[in-house]
Length: 200
Image (cartoon, rainbow, N blue to C red):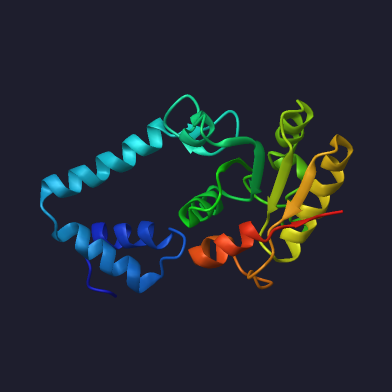
């Protein structure tokens, strides 16, 4: 028995199911929320509802957006001939924070993972191939996480994109095996983008 009312127990349970939040953190967050005034809680609840209702995937790169296309794809000052392929939206945000990259993106929404039955059909790979096939892209940067499944995904993308004759590079420097991109600091990511290597 925790001593919390049932409604607080339920709130703790829901919060603890969020990624990266353990039972103690969930407890602290829940108690913080219930201690706030009604207006503060209403703003939080409304922000969640609005984000959930308005956000959708950009039809070009599959980033999250609340507009017709995302801010990055809509930015004419960016280099639309260079596409950085990432596994998840959070990887895109991590690279953006580095401030080094000025091209556009393509979000796969996962990586090839045979153990968990995630195949190429479950990812936005067909859409990437279609983008490259249009002929406007000169370089594809593979920014997969440096682990087993990331390596499999990068090798597959290299294979399917090679016939189009685009330059294919992969970020590597400063990213040790097993590291998740969204946990890497901005300086390391900046070096990884700058020192990317072409895949032959």
